[in-house]
Length: 233
Image 1 (tube, rainbow, N blue to C red):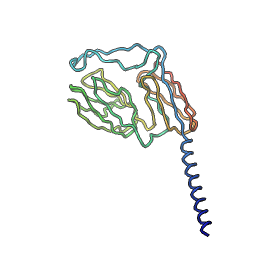
Image 2: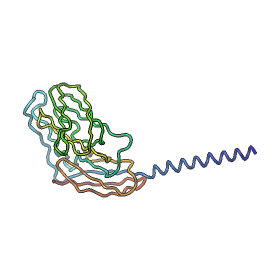
Image 3: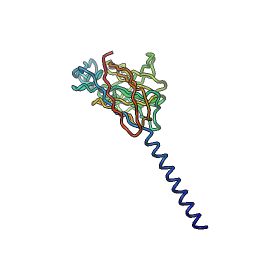
Image 4: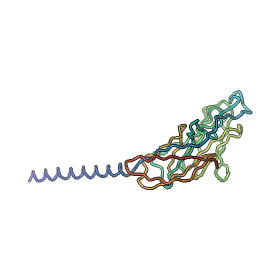
């Protein structure tokens, strides 16, 4: 009797272990990775914008980041989104910093209804003034001294433009989206991990350049390589 009970317990534990292993394997095999590079032909040379106020703090010029590309054509600040794929439980925390009389980062993507932290490092009066895609003000925060931190909500999806009322050259963008996404780095690269296996549409946004949506196929446990070429709109 005891041997039968012991054997039954061992068999039950073995079955449970196999079931857990199968479930874990299924989760791991059910997703893949999208890795890509964003490029353009004939990238513009680096440029600057003239500073016409607060030169003691801001200097005489600042970098023009409208199109940020290296000599090989790798493009930064392109937003790549997975249509219909929601954000994971761990979401990015958006932040807009007034630093060196520029908004940092220039471009980011944030989940809808997230809180953006607005900060400043500059010893001058900045404003962080956002406009939605209907050109309506989202919020307008005065940042009169360094170290100030203010949280504001990003309530609706769309492309948010950020400007400073005191310094006309300052601009940034927040793509507020229900869809998961990533922003290309200085090398043009981006990565989207834990993407459900299957066919997906990628949409691309850039403040000056454009590209048609792409359809990609993600296979479980594999990495799909994508090349995106941007063109003038």
